[in-house]
Picture 1 (tube, rainbow, N blue to C red):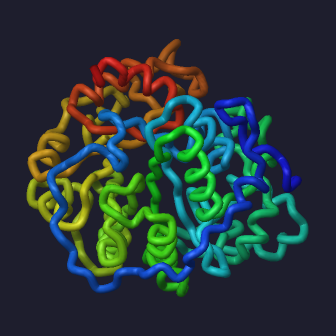
Picture 2 (picture 1 turned 180 degrees about the horizontal axis):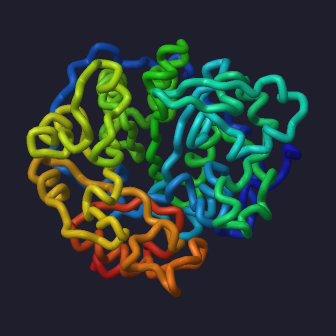
Picture 3 (picture 1 turned 180 degrees about the vertical axis):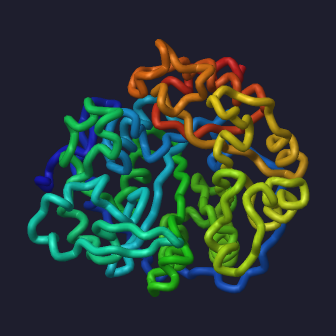
Length: 388
């Protein structure tokens, strides 16, 4: 991508170029990282970092319903649409930089498969027990990844988004932090970020642990305090505990389907599943190292076998009783991702927009504190009444 290609238009009509985003390199790379600090029990549930509105609307990988995910274009559009916060997934590179990808295997989110100079890097790896074939960020330097173009990850569901394939490169976390700082100055308030640590145990075993470089950047950019406009997320409690020793940034334990076992529990031989973690006792334990939980929405309102909504669980109330806020994932406009109750037409067209407003109301009625969404504009409209 040309160095001067615009990342996205600003609100005042000017353009923020890639060169502008990268121009102001922050100093203080040697900022102190706090090691060995005691892990204090978090306070009672509070609003999201930066005191953003509740329910909080978090742009899932940016405005990924409209732009290729984890690009400066997707992040900027999320701000333009009014998102309260932006989720940024993190994986490491061979030279131990952090880049923004949902997974370390990047054939579905970049044009790497069509780049002959990288053909010999296709390989098969086992990541948290799953065998995956493709191209992996840990086999590339950050500079090499910066030459790749990001592409739409769901081209069959979102063909219009393929218009932007190759327009933006894979950003590093430092680039995103520079962008967020610049945008915060321009709009007069911070850009809250939800920073997700992907596969932490897997990368630690490769000597590419994410927690240390992430903590260093949090300190460097002043995001290491409890009141900073940043939240660290992970599906692994062990990773959050490591972060608690290095920064006071708020922490979220992400929770997948009830029958799954988090990778860190599997490695430790702990037989518990997510179903055990969302019991009152499990939530009390989580409250010792996290401030929020991020459950899949099926843990809040399960689905029947026919994909219609079943009776709600007590998860939100149980979490609140233990001082934990609840930010569920992921709301998308398309029929394919909505409960059958809210699909439009005969439901067979997965790309058709469904009744996302009704779906949002169903989850907000449970008292949920925030929602991750690919389409922040529609969820903001649906959540507006709940904020009054």
